[in-house]
Length: 188
Image 1 (cartoon, one colour):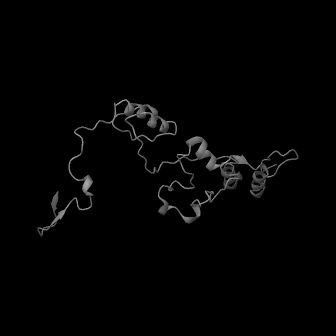
Image 2 (cartoon, one colour):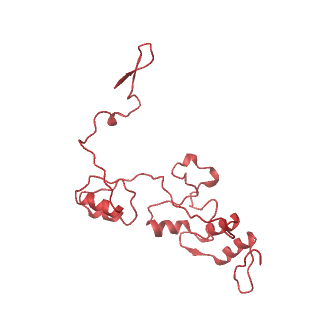
Image 3 (cartoon, helix red, strand yellow):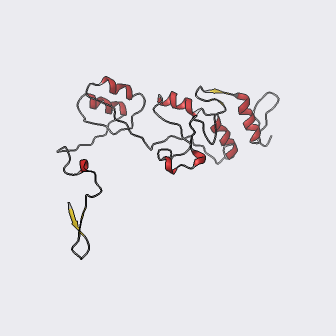
């Protein structure tokens, strides 16, 4: 493909930045896009020969099915998709950022990745984690997989919470407990 530029008659190769393997006609005559009800249904359609590929984000339950399908293979790539825990911050105590920080420390992100995603995910402190060069140093997980902002108040990776550590975090955030160990509202 060539295109002319300017009025001086000079020309430029329009495909100059396109890798050779992507130049030319596509390797198919027709492209049909369909919507299916789930990632598992999409994998089944590929396995049954009704589809050539799926671009669905596959959940952990769909991955083992690929190995059972003779004509299916898993091709992976890093996704920018993320899940987050959000709060209605209009009412106390969730309106308090220090309280929300303590709540974040009560979530074992390593264990969550293993239990909810069968290890097919990585914990992150930023929705930009898929583009590491965009993540500020203070939000990067270190080589030990420790949350840089709100480390788990327990034994990370096991889901085992250290209740006394959690109480200390709440005390540090300005909260108190009654004689029976119940958390008191800040006004009490």
